[in-house]
Image 1 (tube, rainbow, N blue to C red):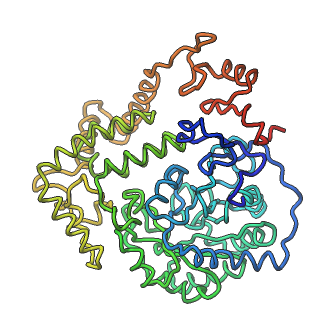
Image 2: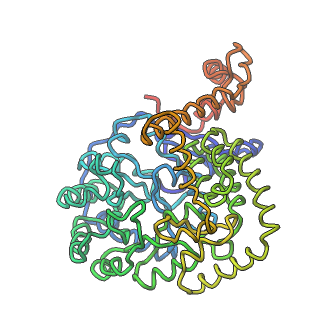
Image 3: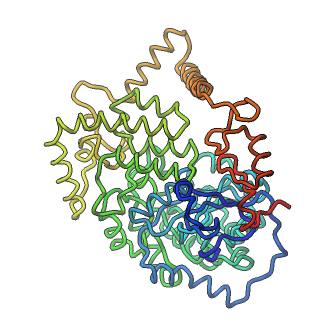
Amino acid sequence: MDGETAPDGYEVEKCGECDANDDEQTTASDDPLNIFRMPKRMTLPEKVKNSEEIIAKNLRFWRETLEKQRITKVLAPMVDQSELAFRMFTRKYGAQLTFTPMIHAHLFVNDGTYRRNSLALVKADRPLIVQFCANKVETFLAACRLVEDVCDGVDLNLGCPQMVAKRGRYGSWLQDEVDLICEMVSAVRDYCKLPVSCKIRVRDDREQTVEYARRLVEAGATMLTVHGRTRDMKGADTGLADWSRIRDVVEAVGSKVPVMANGNIQFPGDVERCMKETGAVAVMSAEGLLYNPLIFDDTNAHVETWKIAAEYLEYARKFHAGTSAIRAHVFRICHHSLLEYEDLRMRVSLEHRVEDFENIVEELGKRARADAETGKEREAEARQLFETIRNGQLMDAIEVSKQPHWISKPYFRLKEVAKESIVGEGEKTFREKQKEKLAQAAKEMGVSMKQARKRERRQLSGARILEAKRTKFPPCARCGQPAGQGCTNNKCKKCCRFQCKTETMDCKSHRYLFASRTTVTVAEN
């Protein structure tokens, strides 16, 4: 995509903000905030090998782009959490380059519904890199060619450490098959118009890591992102990223391609410190931005969590974020406060609609303000502490974890901090309380803890279903069946389609685009 017009053949829908400005005579393809999605049916032309000029141009692309636009702050690719709404939200507060969530290349190529649902785009979200996971050369190449017109680059995920990646043979679990990785990268270099980059984790051995990076660059990678943790550093064993290992890679290949650093970005000022210690051209953040989406903004980094969540929900509504993404972001942004208010935490896990999440955050704000009134002195001390950390003082995880729950701060796993820093003397942590409840339930039911946990999960799933069924939908104005939620015509899907088709109208809720087809060509064949 050239960043000026939506490509022909892509489904265009108005964002929430555009709905309020229908009087303005702008076409769907002209508005930079209109959302467009990949068509369900796409046919790739015969592949043509790139000329040496195109390969050389792609090799220079990211170095020239990063320098020209002075890009140093990057939003990482995160499954179901670097969705369009969150990308646009973080851009407002300092993110300059964004990645899509990791997309499964095989499903993207072969499943039209997955392709359409996995990628939502707007022209304002640029520069943008689409990340894929793959383990087959032709599949990865086909996926990259499908997005040639809608992004600035493609990325191969070689960093995911989760067990699902091990079972699927992708992410960091593919790093033992370097020859296969290089084949995939070379194929995209030779037959795709876009520059290809790779996101990797450091290997157990320093020399192995440097050699690994060299092989990727030789294969055609135009940019590398290096996460300073090994693939075994996850969950409770995450620990700190080793910036010196990233510097090894920068010194080895930094003269050929730009290298971005990833890991340990938790406070404003960490970006500059990381770039100084590693020599990286830019810094990527993942978990740090999930718990505080404002860490790239030096002036607004530590505001009340409920205020951040409320603003994110505005973006979620505007850019049609999915329920799972909204729930995950509310959980993380308000993590520390939700540990204090268990009833609100449970409500977050049950709700499905944006307005319900907005009500929860509103209630959270009321309670947090009441706590803040009695904790003004603690809040002032916390802000002073955060300022000293921003100015270079070494962060003490125990000290930071003691700060008020209503102010945005990093997330620390229990193993990383002392238990007494999280709860008062003689008190129990949230997890200990939950485990105690589970043990009591298991004893009453006469089953094992494992079985009790399974039953608890089933009960939670059932509660979600009941909550969804409890939602009342207005009747269809034509047939009396339940109308679609948010339908502009107040009709069920079938009746809405009939009206939109006969009267040449659009319906955002049902995604009928009969009116838009006069200005935007929608591929249906």
